[in-house]
Amino acid sequence: MTPSETSSIPALPKDFSSDELTLGVVGLGYVGLPLAVEVARAGIHAIGFDVQERVVDGVQKGESHIQDVPSEAVAELRSSGRLEATTDMSRLGECDVISICVPTPLGKTRDPDISYILEAGRTIAHALRPGQLVVLESTTYPGTTREVLLPLFEARGLEPGRDFYLCFSPERVDPGNEVWQTRNTPKVIGGITPACIEAGTAAYSRFIDEMVPVSSPESAELVKILENTFRAVNIALVNETAQIADRLGVDIWEVIEAAATKPFGFMKFTPGPGLGGHCIPVDPHYLSWKMRTLDFRTRFIELASEINSEMPAFVVQKVREALNRNRKPVNGSKVLVLGVAYKPNIDDVRESPAIDVIRELEKDGAQVEYHDPYVPEVVDQDRRWVGVSLTAERLDAADVVVIVTDHRDFDLEWIFDRARILVDSRNATGKLAQERGEGEPQRWIVKSPSGSA
Ligand code: SAJ
Picture 1 (cartoon, rainbow, N blue to C red):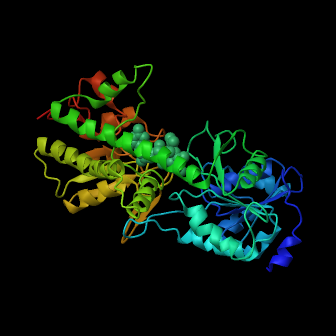
Picture 2 (cartoon, protein in one colour):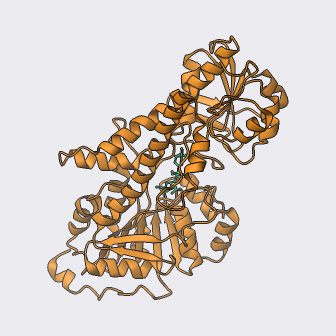
Picture 3 (cartoon, rainbow, N blue to C red):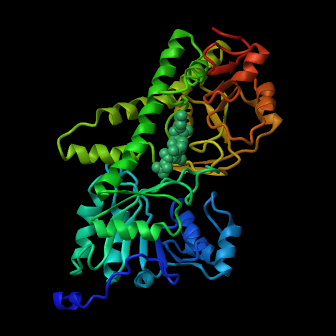
């Protein structure tokens, strides 16, 4: 677009208050679909863009592929005509606002993979027209919005804050959280220019209860990484403390419960089998990578990652100890793993530590089966595991039962009573074991016929 053409650009719609607003969401995953639904519920025409036909067809038919979004909500918004989905990226030109909610995984070498952001940016740049607001939501390293997306849009001869708006607003979706959802979770937003921040705040205020403007996209990008690094580091702290308590013969969960009685200055985190999900184990590494390019080492992130990655092996060591006390080698033992999702009550297995636990046990020759009511099968790299039903026979037949993820659906008393040996990485049955006078003081091996070593 030549400078003379841009000078005739109509004034940007400053407040995005008009009802005939159209908002496009690029990427209909666990962030994008809830966002599109919230936007449509607010009376704004929401168009979901996704490259997967299956995803688009599902939404068009009024079905949800995301556990936290009921299909009824999608169907209702489809019938009201406020929500639609398409693979036709040329329709991006119809949108006044475009939110980018694509994955930001780590590549094979654990470096950021921003190929999805680049692909979305190029597609949007192609359709970009004067007056549009573009908001990147995908978690990424500070600088991505300005260094990667902005040049793609400026190449069209458009100037941010004058011809279009560009912001970063991190997603804060907590899968499975029934209290804090897209609409009522405060949302941070930073823009390339003050006018961008003003436009982004005005647009998002139409469907988000509380907006939190900050001075730049870099600030908003770092807010998100700090939030997730905070969790990764504190989870690593309790995981290391769990290893310390184990060696001291102390019940780590008793220690944490007691520490959590401090009414100020302490925040409870609990040890477990490791760090799963597509955010907490991943996002901090985006900052590590960026800071390495600036010759700075993010030591907390690297140490936290190291400690959290030790936990699957720690759980397998507990299984080994429990079998050993009963004069059973791991090799040839039947192990039943309960819960493979990366955290309770969801169906997502990305980066799940349960997969590391299963692989490690199989490496030692164990015959491993898993049961997870949310996860019928697991495919990871070269392997595929199919979940089994949880029956009394299976519990009786297992040499050891291992709770890796404690879904609320589990009948813990039944499991505790039927399991011959029970290893519990989430302290789901700690109280039961205490009531029954069973298990080791450290609470990881909660039931073992031979008692403690
Ligand atoms: N975990 C522990 N101990 C804890 C808390 C969590 O071992 O005390 C483990 C979980 O089992 C899980 C992993 O850490 O494997 C991540 O758990 P998470 O509760 O952080 O859950 P995510 O990754 O699904 O969602 C998080 C959001 N969760 C919370 O804030 C509670 C939030 O940090 C982000 O909005 C989201 O990641 C994201 O998308 O970044």
